[in-house]
Length: 255
Length: 312
Image (cartoon, rainbow over all chains, first blue to last red; front, side):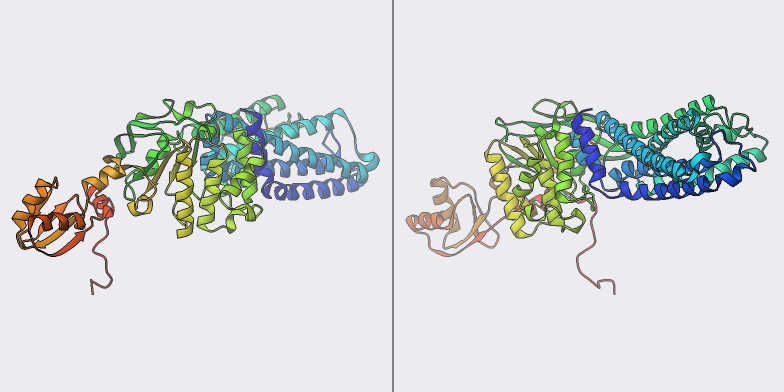
């Protein structure tokens, strides 16, 4: 892989508009959710808050849920669109071997996804500070959530890219990802519970993501794996999807 | 363009898609400094062959090389080979200059080369227009500009005349001639011989994935040259006189006319005059190379007799 291939992949994104269009929704949700939860935290904290980062930070988790989803959609579109518009042909004709191109694409995908994550987290943090004032507990745990949040964002962008390469379609991959993220996994987990396998769902990627982003706050919750396990599970799911997409694109005929 | 020609070779290329044999033991060479037409009817395996040669499709067996090296082992492939395989290989929402700058970065040429390539194909006026607004001919030109970014010494073009108007086809012909004249090697596919007849030096014709003909255009023309049908007072005497003058390819038709190949009417008239044979008429019969091509290739997907309403 060369700097030229990285530049090429960055240009593939910046010469289109989808990358900033996809940022709008998580940014807006993160901003408003963080502002609202931070603003009402004073009265709600008197009732209860099981979050170690404080009730004022609830909006941050909404923001993370959305930016993780949209990072996945970004990855699916960025990879799948190469097949949709057949730009994979000139791409592979421009470089020696396919691995360099695929590595550059995944690195740039993660780079943009982290950009999404940072922008949303900084905006969310600013809203929490402005509207939460003294109710916001600025602790190491909060910054820990920021970090694992960024890790989850990066993982889901790679899962999305892997799906884009496997589906050979940006729309199909994005729809599959959204369906699984929003409802599919919870449905599967529910069915597994019905068959007596309560723990099954906790090994799935969305549950592993939630437990990872919670950064240990859900370690005692029955439906989730402990943070360390969840972190590894999420990493393995990411490797499985991104690796499968890589392998498929590396080996398949480009017709 | 780089100096020195590059040989393009296919040796025993074979590709199976499941039980279907798309290309079968295809061997041919494209000499440097020339334009080689790669002809075959739709579905004959042309695109699959070109994609195998460029490392996009893995051959079931056989190999293709450029200057003796497989495409996948060339360090900077776009600087050696430029290819237009699909005019639709463009994102419709990306501007022409944006598209080229994506690939100029990947190839490692300066961005100014993107502007030069656009000028080369006559699209500089629409550099900032989105590719989705382009006609098929304009997309072909943009695809060609992409192929030229790395200033390659070999061009591989899959049906590049599709969508081009007559002016565009004439431009492409001149461009390719100039490219080959400067030492470049060109392999250009088509399913219509007439489309590339005036452009190419050599021909590779395939049918059902197998080689049907390989040689120069001149050889093909010579092998299927036109005849002159002569109505004369004494066909036998005229045939003997022509043979005495070196024109040995003459046959008497059942209608009494003498069919003479390899010469011109004025030469026949001169021989007849000196032999004392009266000539009543001559008809030059041109062989249509397109018909020769069609005879060589058996179409894989043949429609019924042309016409409309025959079933009524």
